[in-house]
Image 1 (cartoon, rainbow, N blue to C red):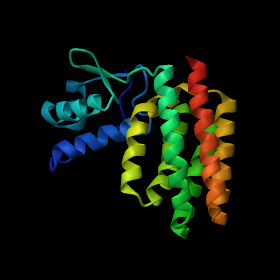
Image 2: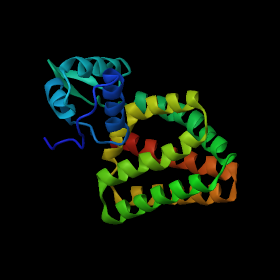
Image 3: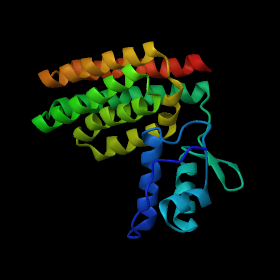
Length: 218
């Protein structure tokens, strides 16, 4: 099993730090479908005791983001067609709306951050670097969703991505990367123009293609 890209963390507010770090690993695809982790392995990597790891994993399994495989071994649960369709439906409600809100409060820093994320996506697609594409895809989308300035929407979107994000590793065909980046580019251009409708539509198209591609893999 390849090592996770993690470093030890400080002991202050340990439970929340561990939970947030595990969420980040799921959200950016660092823990992929089929990859197993253990309480002891995570505790050693983070430099903490088993207790905060156990508590964080309990929260993530309750949210259906992780599942107990056997004993102390944890993995990403497989998605079935019904779950994908359900998440597709809810994502299409929340994420285009967040894109619309973000487009209503454009500033230079946001455009710069989004341009950097788009550049990373284009390089990852050119190199067919799946892990980098998944991480950059997460960065691009959440640059938008954080800028929407809605903690409620952001929390709900993060929970959806905790469940579906790791499965983005399964989308590895060149045409999938190319189409996704066409939608990312369209969203970026819309944000530069302050066109909320076009930004929301580009995010909608990206979600529909990605989730339909996951369905096609079942």
